[in-house]
Image 1 (cartoon, helix red, strand yellow):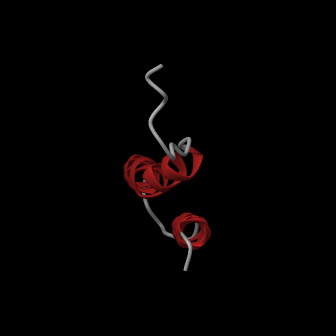
Image 2 (tube, rainbow, N blue to C red):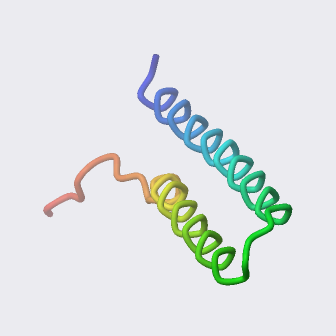
Length: 76
C-alpha cells in the first residue's frame, strides 16, 4: 500500500470516527431533554457533555485540517 493510500485511509477513518462521535453526542443531548432534572443540574450536565464532545472531536478535526508536509524545504 502506498504512503498516499495509507494517508487517505487514516483520513477516512478519522472522518468516520467524527461522524460516529457526533451521533453519540447527539443521542446523549436528546436524552437530556426527557430527564426530569432541575435547571442547574441540566446546565452542568450539558456543559460537561459539550466539553467532552470538544475534547473528543477537536483533535481529530485538527489532524484532518493540518497541512501535509512531505519534505523539508530546500536550503538553497
